[in-house]
Length: 358
Image (cartoon, rainbow, N blue to C red; front, side, top):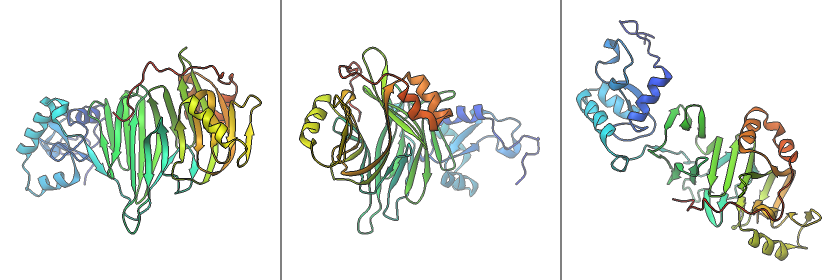
């Protein structure tokens, strides 16, 4: 296969053209809606093309592309599908979907350098709603991962459902290259980046996710969870932690009501191993978890056995947290600690209350 056609046109399609093609193809194969795709020159075919024209290129999955190559699917039908999908409203277009491979029975999601045992099935919980859940398979059945991912404004950008990833058509861009899925809010702004490592692992390489008044920032190396406060600030928690076992009610990260954490603290006080600040606003209890009560945030919630390696609680601007997390991830804990710790009277921002699963 040559790098250029008979007109000297390179096989490389410029990034801006590829993005326009993805947007017009609604981020998936225009025939079957599979989310893993390649770029197909419709008319003229690549060997006769003199330019990479997004009006004449669409997204096709490998199977549909093979059908075109073998003559089982006409270019005319592909062109008609491409024209139709551009004019249809989002509610009439199926979202792009792609398979997840957990056939060996295991299922693992890596996020923010968190270390947790397979017994931890809920990775992220917001006020009783499990947003990221990992369920290993039993008796030869494949494992499962279900998740709802949102952007920094709380808008849903992607789901993991029944061992498939499902994109959202309202995104500015969803790009799939090899094993990596990247969702962008706009040019240069990544809302979510996942790496699929079959047969059993999904790695969250980047996430910038708001859930009502909660916020999750994470890369593959580190993470922080925060609460948006009514004065416009964000108060953050980072805990370097290794969860060794977990109860059926446990969660690696949990957002809860301040009042419920106070009740939980009173219930577990005196049980297990326990450390606390002098005012009992931050409590580390081996049974209950790492509870930052003024913020309603718990790490290793109700897990039962964990090792705490480092802990930081503080107030930092969201943009600065993003910068430090990407450029100096090893310094995140110290960066958070340089600010004033959240006061017990801090009130979470309830003005953006929304159903996190909608």
